[in-house]
Length: 111
Length: 115
Image (cartoon, helix red, strand yellow):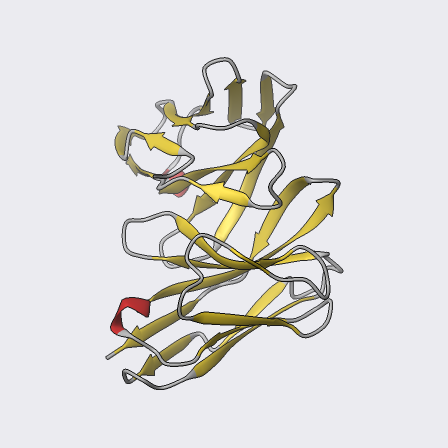
């Protein structure tokens, strides 16, 4: 099964609202990363949070990490139509030289 | 800088045919990866190369081979294509910092259909 599992699988909100996506994982990690994928395109890195960090901000993005619960959340504030995309969490597993991606949350922002 | 480039962008194969997907990066990254993405799914790692001269299997390596030609280039070969290999293939690269990977940079993908 996937190391990272996102919740919800799909989310539809009105422009201007906040969007929250969650990611759970199973093993110890070095870091957790969030990526965005627009339809038909490659993934674009959004933010990286290290295992010793609890919260990180980048523009309208806020990421939290709770290593005791093995979970992370991505908050997008004041959403825009251009935020419509799929969002993936990826975990950098301790002792393994690779990232493991979740199945993603498909976010739709309605005008 | 072009970042990560992939060729071809689209390909249609018949069952049993072979082909090589090419990937190159101009960011002087140590590590390179090949993923496949099936409809509605996340990315699954096929093979990766932590540094020039090394390659390792990922989650779904069966039916594929790779070559790390030099620091810039990492190719993926399908020796005998099967319909189950119909997918979108992404190449990515990253700087390796100790055992922790930093952000990965992705190419635009290759859409492969096997009939």
